[in-house]
Length: 412
Ligand code: AMP
Ligand code: GLY
Image (cartoon, rainbow, N blue to C red):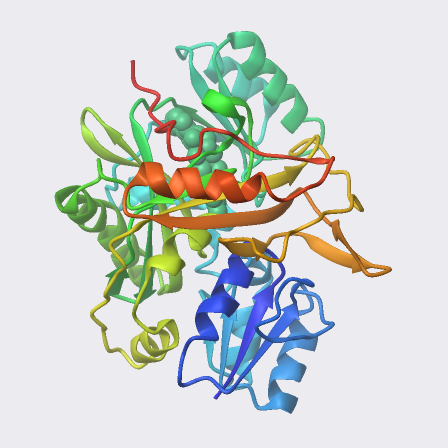
């Protein structure tokens, strides 16, 4: 069969790499992809060109399309493909609101009794500030809409919170102000179709840009998987208390979900609480999780689209994925910096944002490469990942040094 993968980052690269291992797949196309994605043919159609992609899929007789980025989902790529009877894995535009509107997601959590932090949403600055004045610090300020992980301020002073509000309301906007949760953060991603939930293994992302969880939030600077602290009972609580009720709610609201459902979860003293939902696989979670999955991903997706579940098997080893990012990320990103990668790199390498110019590999975005190693212990995976990261030479890339050793836990 022919598979089309939509997107151009590290998540799409690992999706292509995993798809290439399926005996069911004859040909892979990636639109637009990046130069590192040698597993398939790159198609020069951007991931926001929903019509163009649907026309391509029709013309090429693509059997299955897998959508990487939330932006394509929010634009209604699934609606357009389904209108044309093209098979596609991802939520439609309405269901993708679970991520594209923090306000929608929070209201759904309230309505369906899903544990999360207390919150209020505002589209008026004065009302937002009045509310802030009644709350305790720390507090979390979230801009509504898709912000690639960067629209969230965890404010430890009133001043920071006010600055975040000023910044958000510099244009007409919507904001969610929510209670700060203390605990151990993890990502649970499931392959979902209406009420069928196939949970993947847990990963922990490192969201802050600098070592020791300092600096602003990013899309994610690295992950490890599995996460020993999150045992089967906690995974089950997350499914029962967070994922199931949300999926029941989505169906009841006339927007049943299918695709990768991503729950960002805080394990608090009172149990699991939802930080956020995403309507797609995480990046770099995908780079940590999919290399551990032994089952054929394409078979799982085809089965679930056919309302059948699949038992997954996993590599017991740990993975550590370290993201190499452009200097100044997440504020801005220098692009066009040359990168030298040795031929004998002993790790999986997923390209998040690269290009080739005059035969030279260059950076082409905020997050540039994801280097993934296995180990029988977390320590070994980490050691190997960093040994390989150090072989990659570029003056303009940086990375965190503590992926896999700093456990993202903000509890005192
Ligand atoms: P989000 O984009 O909602 O996942 O937020 C980005 C990051 O900010 C999360 O991964 C958390 O580390 C942090 N964060 C978001 N909401 C909260 C909260 N209510 N309490 C504590 N930390 C949070
Ligand atoms: N790494 C977090 C995300 O993909 O949103």
